[in-house]
Image (cartoon, rainbow over all chains, first blue to last red; front, side, top):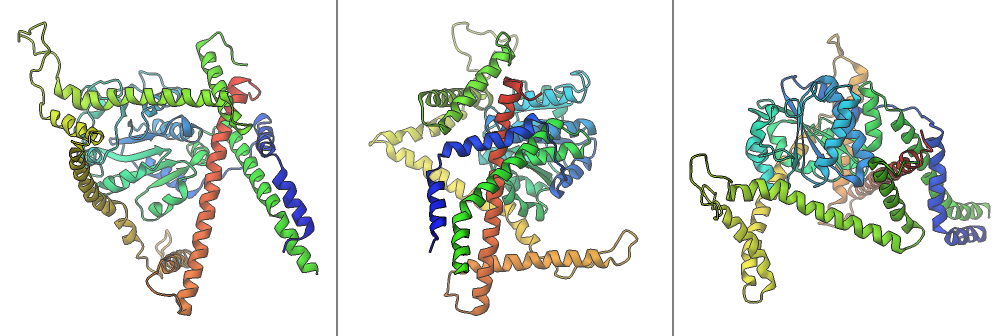
Length: 290
Length: 240
């Protein structure tokens, strides 16, 4: 039975304008962003594992990045892709992008990579499109195509995102197979949806290393794959991106500030949950007093 | 504030308008929100169609079908389309695709069932194949030794590492066993051991669901913070 105070409290919460809750969130998260507050950040083991996997790639092998995100998840996915690309640039590892989930993916990935190259102080000639990296555009992820891709990259990928035949891209000459016996050592899926399941299903048998940079929503479901060794490493949401920037020695002050905002947003949600539980607690306390 | 007289500035203003228009639904349903929603859906659909043609149908189907100009030295008839060297079997793909649309005809809708059943069979077979790639490695890795012996860098027995690794494996096996017990629906769970294991399994799953909820909140807050940063940094320059 609920106490009278508890009932009154519940009635008050029920009458509370929900718009105030949204306004509260803005007011709670704004001070860390405006005041540039920074909180401590510790890299998690999945992020460390991804860093180690990238650094273990032989220099002559390629990395494929499946960039499967669009504007909807850019707050999480863009910094992830930037961090991974900057790490590859620091390691001088050549990479190839493609998208299987979002038609707008190649355009967004292109601008993100071009910005990352500038941030690493490399000119277009030093890290040249076609020779050191390429963007193969959007491909529809139907199962027959993915099966073909797992068998032969040349057969599945015909042109880049500007319709240049891949035979004209120096980086892809002779590149056809995945895994230790092939030319592609790793595939990293930067994704806002469940595209990684295609790669588990069809690329696991090739023994190519798989890395994942996913949104926070998806991360808990991916831990069994880390445990089974199907995933070499993982970045979880914006937090994963911030950790990766720290790990590669290129800390992002902007992301650290946003992470402080994120912590304050979480604190606000926790406070709301506690507030919602006050009537139950009051009822329990008054029953105990009696 | 972002300048309105440059292209980049204009893009930021459009982005800010779209963000505020979409968030305005938090206040109440309104025409500005509807307008922004419809504009977004229209642009996304249009762009999606264009990219599907440009990146999928054109290079993989149309270009194979009509391979382009004749080789040098071969006389062409200027008024006629060039069908030389086309991979004509791709026409069957168009035919198969067109069979879907017969669903709208009472007389010919049996044709749509032909293509649907073919693809359902194909899908079922491929799903079976996918299961092996995706889940079988996990089943294999779930066979963990309960007692682990670890060596340190010098090659001698490392007691602390061995205890931690053994405990981790034991915990994994216990969690897997209890959760699997929860899904034994074939008989009534009267046995005390089974009943308690199932109870523990249910609690473990609730903890996992709690972790998923936490991650979902984190993801949503990240998206919100991304927009907030855009508005206050790129648009009105409150955040430097």
